[in-house]
Length: 265
Length: 334
Image (tube, rainbow over the protein chains, first blue to last red):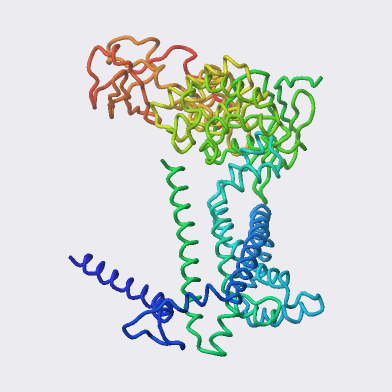
């Protein structure tokens, strides 16, 4: 009896917590459907005019495309760098490699505003300010630790005997990484790439510092939309962003479930 | 043309230290081509460390290992061409049984047709023809064990190293796999180096057994030699059971099944040597284990074949113990 009471209290708490975390973001959905021309809650009647405006505006569409290019490039670059880092640290595995790992995680720990200032100062002499490569590099620096964490987690479950088995059968270190280690940490790489994509997709702090006219990402356009005029198109863009994020996570969850089924079945 | 290695391994003064701890201490051992050699010892005796140094997964601290006269001490594991069956098998979970077995040939860039033919042969050797396309996760423990064996043998290594390969199997299956392993060894003639802590496995499968203790070799010999003529108390008690008798000229080992138990009047297989009272009888079907308290010394354990036992043995019974001359073996040390 007691345990079931506790269980139901726990369940209620869990739902409340979930609502607390999710509800503020979901406010964008009704706001995006308002028929008014300023940010407001719709009263009774709904309209898709802001979505129409979003998909017919060259500015918004270009920002979508720019954000997509930057986020995909960041995800690819961060996955390669983060995976190599994780495998390297795992193979060396000494107290020094733990120090190196802590250093590599710094971009996650340092307040983004400080990273933003540092990158701004650094990008000026390098001529990377307000360019695709500048943004992709900056986002990659922020996102690589994500991949390092997820791939390291996969490696923690990796049986080191598999590496020995591969070498004992005559495979070089590189062949072993390619044919045994990488396939085993694939889920970690995909998860890390997804986190890297999303980090870049909604990154605003660093982006504000190092881009101006040439590159105009989606979060930056939303930021300006809110600051300069209270245009509900921002809410419509937010809904699209939420939708894309949910789709990506669903794909990754389904893939993970498939993988679990094929390996255990 | 490359000369085929013959599989004659020579280990000279081999040591391995971890910090201040000597896991393997100055081991000399010759492993002959084609023999089934077992490294037997309790955990911590250094048997797995020794195997890992032979495999090339552990650097050696001192000494040398030669294969057919040439030192392999500095060769990395991937250049030694030894097959290895790991404890827990270490099969590649993302590859099919076929790809697991063919891995060594495929990393050697052999033609696909050759790999296919060779893998088919190995599948037949371990009787897994119907499981070629399964993943390791879809196989039973015994089947996984056979995949691991086929994978390690597929590239015809001169030496096969086996690290407690049957540890994860239940007892009945283990006996079955022991026979298969012995049979496969006989058919392919590869040198087998087998690590186990199970004395029955060591006795039933090996040509020679190396008993290890605290990183050093305690005694080497055929199962018969080791069982009949142990030289130390440790060897006598680790391989089989033994009673120990302290005599004026030293310590003797006496196997429980070599003792004849008889009533006070009847004669035994030899002169009556001890008299005592039965303190317990445990029935095992084919035999009974009888503990006899004797006046002078430790209780004596006697294994009695059930069929020979004409009068029922009961606790408290007064009995005579006899054994033939030479049944008790003099030990050189502890």
